[in-house]
Image (cartoon, rainbow, N blue to C red; front, side, top):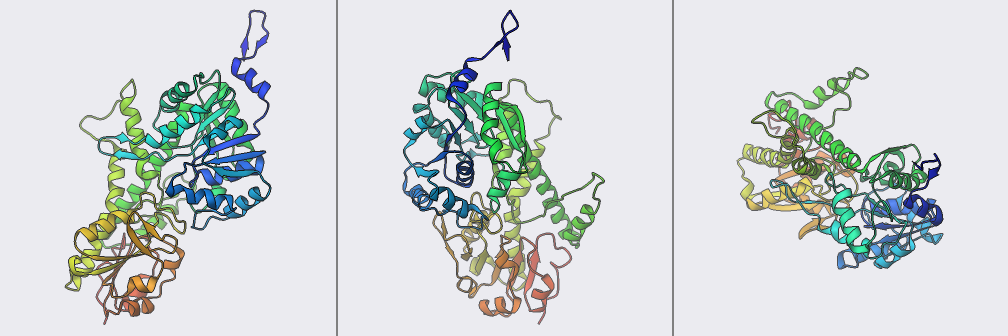
Length: 484
């Protein structure tokens, strides 16, 4: 609050605009993807109306048509999502459109647009799509609208680039004529609705009025989660730091898995022992090792953090002659698909074969179990290494039909036919039910290689059936005798 010389409360310009405008009733959600779709459906369930805003391009037109039919364009398992979309469509509370002029009608607009990196080594972000979205909003911005960035962004973006673009396009002043905040998404594919409702929501405005208006937007959709309010810069760092710490944990267990392979022990036994110290604050919730991280944001948020620190006015103090611990962790995790390649080559070598002349079946293109999320999938790196070496590669995924020119089949038998090696990149439930005798029969080989990047199969069952088995972190099994 602001007080005059008589001690009376003086309402700020922005708060007075909100008072005249009234509570939030209509919302626009820019970006109909893994974040925007569930957010729009949940907002529509709690507020009067929601516009889902999506660019009208060949690749995105499908999403608009599906959503307006009350169907989810996301093909993986997403409990409750399609039912909620259908509900709000039937109630006439949600519509998807490419007409960004609808922003003039809303009280709040959220932005859920991807923010990848052009060059990780040079720490060069690709903010083109986000900038385009902000310019579209700015052209139709009106006084009293709340704009919230949900995209993962580099520290300083909300008060810097976003505020600048919106002011340039609208002529309005952020924090005085309209509210501006950052409320980073913290969703997980496969449980989008649940994570939005039950995770605590970080909300950071560029000023107090912006924060309060953003809290008004998000509180109604939370069930178990609570609002954690802070400055927009702190909110930006909170999101990327959380992902970076998670990436660091995964790198630690991936490095441990490589050590366990060398020492001929089972990393999963070690992990279970570490996790047994519950309540002691020593090693709780140790993640699983694998062929790559199972969260899209983890592959880029370290670089957002590094870029933000690099551009800050005060440089961070650090040990001399050392690189970033977080960047090192990212490189360890980036190495895991290459390790899958090395395991595949090792297994084929035991049979006198080489990757160059082999047919290899890749099971799983998603980066996470059961949804259809393929962003920054580790399977892509593994596939590229195989094909560049001359292997014939067949890819299977029950939820994905194609990806950037890569043919992906949903016919498992077709992919396995004649395969000298089978590599499991994703822990889909379908792969957890693989039967060694059936898989061997489909390959048509006496001794196929199977490489488990997610620890989803029983090594002994496959070894006893004549497979050459190799698994990440399975040093206890990777040098087994080949069964006749």
